[in-house]
Image (tube, rainbow, N blue to C red; front, side, top):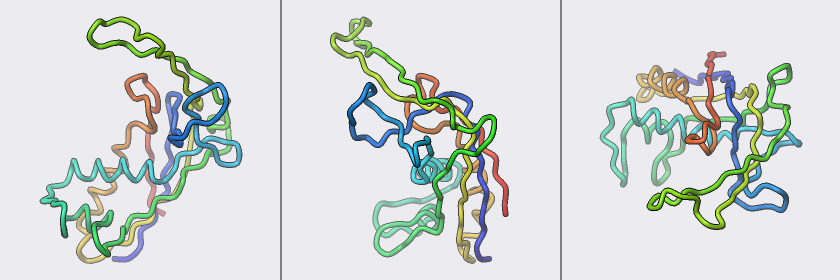
Length: 181
């Protein structure tokens, strides 16, 4: 079949936080990742979501060692089995609703699950971007074995509903648009 390229637009409806996992100086403990001073969505974040969605909707007989299932054929597996799905970083789209909006610091507290009260000394802060629209490309190299999963892969991309951390706090709600180019 060959190469198929998709233009994917992610419209974030709520603030989001994708942090590097390393604490940096400043007011927030979890800092949003930035590219040229603007928040962005790393391709690895989206690829992980797509892989999980694909796993959920496809009948697979996945095993840990030397697997030949559709997920390993598309997303790569152990040994020399490279991925056929390449996801670019998603950068802000210039315009009215573009992700160029301000970064804000949100504060929260931890709740003790047993006493159902505020846990002592557990005030935390995280930096969030105030939503926006992001765009990027996904390139897939289909062969005779994997082309039959094209529809499932497209569905898995459209099923991405959240981006980043803090879903239980309402962060990162997303609408995804997919266009084959």
